[in-house]
Length: 383
Ligand code: PEP
Ligand code: MN
Image (tube, rainbow, N blue to C red; front, side):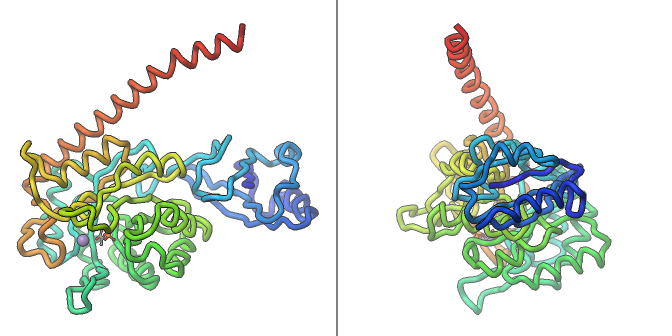
């Protein structure tokens, strides 16, 4: 059970103390307090665990200072979508809103190689009016001999260049908890010119200690990739790890699953799960067509598989697209074969806008079709 307290009720206020005393008298129930930082205000939520079936929901809802009581099912207690759950969802970070209704593109380098390529990429995004990007500094590589990313060394020029081009949020994978501090230090050293969304890669989706460390910090939101060899349920539980440690600002990103059944694509594209994740949880959902498809083949219609897969995700309601671009893919140190070029960015943006508009039109059409049915049902109950 989750108790959302009224906005003026925080730890230490008389109403808070009275609620905690009430709960302390219930045997077998323990309470975890969480401060949820929203764009305008900080809300306090109480997570009750243990023998909550014995609690009287009505009585608790009537306690002074309680705004709302949500009875959660066992799954995804914090990030899940539960019955009668009107908790606000989504978040704002560095001036950009993320929710199940928002839409942002995150094009950029799979791996930062040099300053010039970073600068040219950000300039191309700025020319399209984009304010989010992907940039890989810490790369988890299959071979220990492959380029591992420039790590902390590239952060100052990446952040400085992002700020100069008006990029507000960079999705950046981290592979170790010490990278959080490195990113924080680098941002402070150059005067916070941009923001970072910490990315958990598919190889680390079930690295529980990393998840807990990222969940414990409130500075940065998180983009969690679906694990490529585990069930959707297991990946959603990984997201819940972040929330259970205190960080609810989580975007869930589909990126295909490992299966030879996906051949000739790098992974089997799983974007039909966009609405599933939106239904089961309140997280914004992203798609990564680059790591799903992994190659630049074109259909007989002249459209590349990467564009098709991205559009499939967006037309199904994806809120974010993470996609590899590179000024000179042949020179890229990681994943060059799947990178689109900067000259192709305007077409990609246009294609995604077409898919987004199609999704909004589909949603409106389905809503219109539902309305008469609902009105008839209402008239029946009234008569
Ligand atoms: C990436 O986005 O750079 C990446 C390595 O993706 P994934 O973890 O999905 O393989
Ligand atoms: Mn990559």
